Image (cartoon, rainbow, N blue to C red; front, top):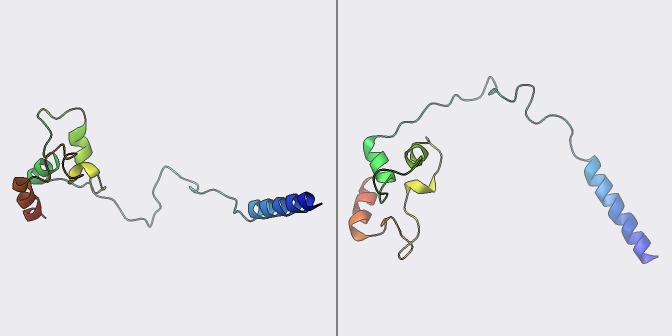
Length: 106
């Protein structure tokens, strides 16, 4: 008896939450285009100093598409800044000589 009531309540809660969801298209009629009133995105360019700072600790020649990832615009990319402290600091971001230059470039 209790199991039947519990099952009935669970079924009603599930059916109610499914019926409450909105239907329709999320992307609109033209998902491949930005809306007319949306802000326009401009291509961001990095100065050579910013690119060199972002590529700190990576041996030359830069492997694969690392340089294009660094120059990806205004997105936050963990490759551009210091990561973990030593002994996991493979790019030597946290060494004393680098700390002063990183702080001065901000």
